[in-house]
Amino acid sequence: MLICNVVGARPNFMKIGPVVLELKRRRMRQFLLHTGQHYDPNMSKIFFDQLGMPEPDIHLGVGSGSHARQTGRIMAAFEEVCQKRRPDLVIVGGDVNSTLAASLVAAKLQIPVAHVEAGLRSFDRTMPEEINRIATDLVSEFLFTTEESANKNLQREGISREKIHFVGNCMVDTLLKHVDVAVQGSPWHSFGVEPAGYALVTLHRPSNVDDPKILRQVMEAIIGVSKKAPVLFPIHPRTRERLRALKMKMGSSLKLCEPLPYLTFLGLMAKARFVLTDSGGIQEETTVLKVPCLTLRWNTERPVTIKSGTNRLVGTDMRKISESVDRILAGKWPSGKRPSLWDGKAAQRIVDIIREHLMC
Image (cartoon, rainbow, N blue to C red; front, side, top):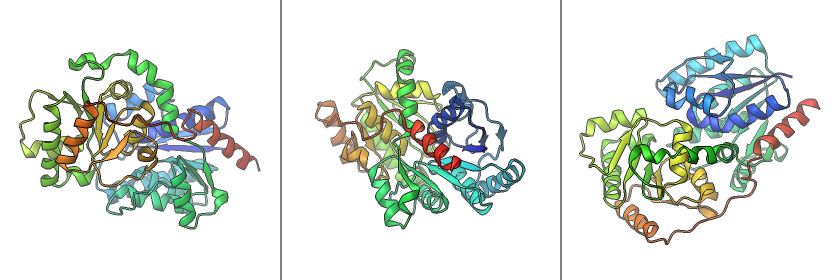
């Protein structure tokens, strides 16, 4: 049996990395394909080094572009790979364009697809990721879920129960394996701040950064937060481009920087007083780390982070953001608890299931 693991963007590496390493540990035949959807060194190459992943066997190098162009280029290139190598299973993760493109190609070639992090739904189809999730799940044979809400979503959509496997969260596998080393690096010293003495921000979703009016509103809220605590802001290339056009004055307490390597960012997140983000994965990571998280969206596909964790939705409401920050600084924020099966063993469960089914 030959397994193809597909990665393409930063979130994929933390989700697929543990599976790749577990397959390698069991000496199962595999190859790793990188679509090149993310190509910035700090958003791509350094992840392979820091996560201990092998270098990709194949790099498609598709680069950036519109959703249609990027997805189309990946599909055309990946089809050639599948026809040449003929994998018996294609494993994809998350909800990026690489995930959708590889899944569609594999399904049309009658190659089974395994979707790591299946079933998550924001119920907001204006999000490109939501379309990618739904379409990928529809063509997948193995749907590996991270929380109970995902199981219910898939069953409601008519997916056979036999295809759904609640295994836990591979991103948590990665986090638990590396967090101690990340903290030992004391990355906060480079920014002149102390543990629990700063906030961390990530911002990249089109709904927040593509509309200048909304982006200005979000940035005004973040600047307001920086007057209460220093704010570290690693800027996604997409966001930097949009922000440059606004020509806003940031203030000395808002520290902007380039995208950070995984271990640096993880160390900062683990010791942050709180995090502001529109990222789905960071909602999960802060829940495990018990770091307060303010999600700059009005919905989430990860409701367990609100039900069990430290996450709260604040949207772009400046007053709600400010009030939430005040509660955090006053020590009135719930510490939460780690969701079921978020124990660092998700990849083991996934490979157990794949091995059993492929052998049969």
